[in-house]
Length: 439
Image (cartoon, rainbow, N blue to C red; front, side):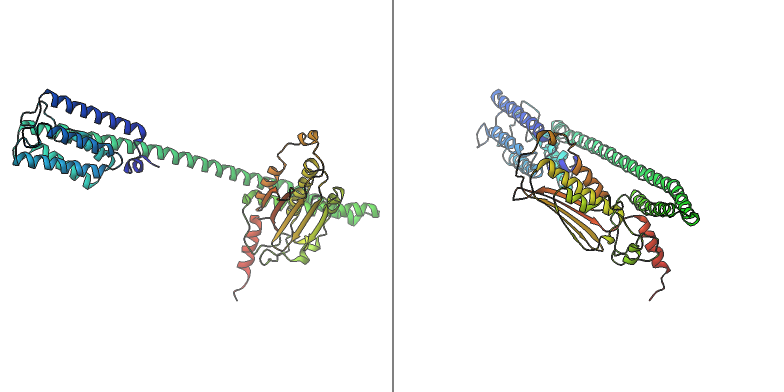
């Protein structure tokens, strides 16, 4: 909340402001009692203490000046009007004809004017202040005492309140500008980081791609010229690995360039086949054209779950997922199984991996442990595995959730896109859509 809005609803002063107003009101009440005791009394039909009672009633109203300044100001103007009209009709009824102190009517007018102008700089508030000035100046019977009371006890508090309010608004504006400048600085830093990341991605693409391309070309030449079948097989293997490295490098660089933003529907397959997928479903013939091994997916998932005694269910076509996504899914399963070994010995584990043209879902569910965990084994971990996986999955445009189940087990769920959300996909999609003739 800014200072202006805080002042507008009366909360800007806080408890210190309420205490200060209360102290000033008590001081005014004590002054009024002393004046009455010193001989300043009324001579009308309401008795000698009529002015004292009138001022004390106004003092009581001022207790609400911070929360309801406009209402209190209107009531003070109404009280001052009644006092002046009564004095004109019957002198000495509510105002002493021989005052010991040349104050305002009512005596606590400065407090009402201050709180009204400071908290409510509105036309209605200034109209109330003007009325109090006129009621104290008394233009129908001008005197130097009345002019003094109007200027000192009404105009001066209003001017000071306007100055203090303007200064508070200026300080608030300066603070807001500082905050805006700080936010802009953070945004500029983030943009600089993104630009540097894109620069590094471009450098990586230019340098690594060049060398890997040479490796693939030399492997192809060796495979063609060699007579030994073992050499040909090794050259073929090097060429295949180089080609897959190029594909994975392009995906990873695309992630670095795009900052992990989610890909829209209608991606290209990312295999340089020149065909556009519909709703993220890549041409499966193109995907199957490049045979994958367990290295593409980060490892053999069946072997990993089998060694951990976990049951594995795979649904859909694993070929719909890009290598980066497959490796991320493998790492999620690997980390979850490692945590089961550490924290839930004897638990049964089920790994469910479902593929669709648009997404990959991984669920690792273990039952409650049947034996206590080994403290030394639990303490050996870094306790940052799932947090690191969550960041990795988020970078790829997915989500990772984990938590205990009602049966005492634990569930880890990762939802990943089937394709890496890279800018290269969008660029190829845009070029393909612009090249296609209109229907």
